[in-house]
Image 1: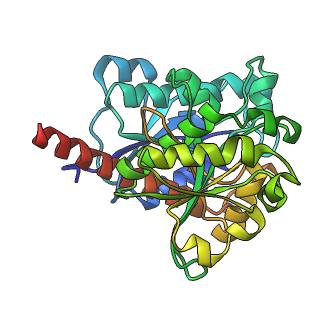
Image 2: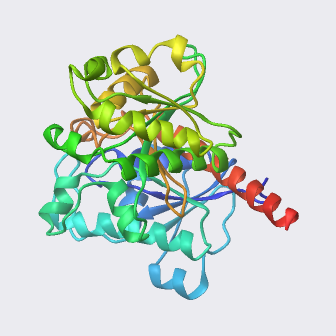
Length: 354
């Protein structure tokens, strides 16, 4: 375990949405378990904190001060804010492309914090992709941007939820493809890409989740997993050969299963992760099962990144503060902290054995 609290960088997301609110609430509630470092517009966050809870205390530092001196010390009842100033005044519920680049700057700052050793992991509040694109920056999502900025050739998007009264064990669903039009999915399912996805899932389940021998179930692409070729060839040509190859490499991988029957308790009770072929195939099930407490995790990065499983909720933000549920953000922060502890333990163990 870490000898100190894990330091978690939290990017507050789209300022006109619920991201800043849930970031503040979750950081304040979990301040005894982690050291939260919020990254966003310090003045706006201070104003919002006063509306939410007058006990919330923030300590702002500039990017330059951070680079000159590192992260300053901070008491348990105070949250550090790395100031990424916005270009325009925030109107709750109303997107403003003038703030798009400032939102992107929070991600760059979080990456820098981890690379410099100031923070142990990053948790991201939801942002609005259209705002960043309207600001003149091509942007498809957190997952792709973090891969690009860390020069990671391939990452895997996984959503997870903890066990609950409704769910006997944790559910983890990874995606072979992410933000693609449905007609582009079959062409994107290629042997090397799918095999690498399985390897990333296997390795991160071991190191970041502490699962010694992960069992991975794979969904087919087509109805009935292709029905022996009558409903599609992808299972025969790509998916099943990849599964066989992965098993030959020592991975415990099973499939391809028909997606309409795979997500049942009799299968899920034995699976540490399910690999779905496309976005809605896997995430519709997980979001239904998680009851709003799902967490988005990017596997394969040289850093730990988790996020909420919901969007910016502009309509809710427009109604005022105090209405947003920070539950998913709290789970995202807790899971990030657990991953930090496991990774630290694995690193220490490897050092001792050398």
